[in-house]
Length: 136
Image (cartoon, rainbow, N blue to C red; front, top):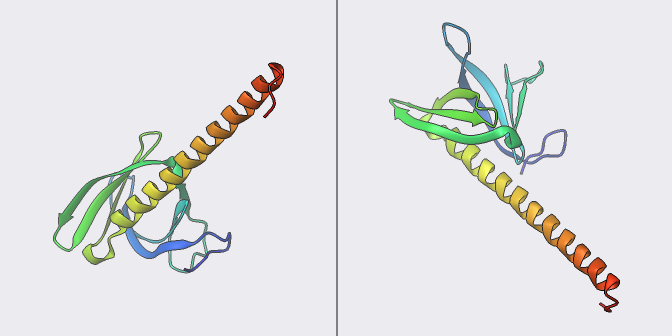
């Protein structure tokens, strides 16, 4: 699997179109790189200029998937309720790649939270045992 400069594994990369936020709401082509923890959007495939970096931590859901003609339209909803509209050619399946990466990210996050809670409980129990004079 390909890696980018920060060592993250690339899940998918290529062209994706984003609807602009301005009044005309034009579709603009972006070169995107999806990794295990982020979606990066660049103005061009050379990645010369700084792109938008959207952490999967900031994404709540991939929503409103619709297939029309040769395009799949979908919306990425962030944790602060901002919506970004995208479209891609049907065969590129960016919506499913982002959704799967988001599910895997949330699962890893849940496992880490569970393990941290479990470690804290074990530490607390060990302290309780010491206070009560019990041996481990």
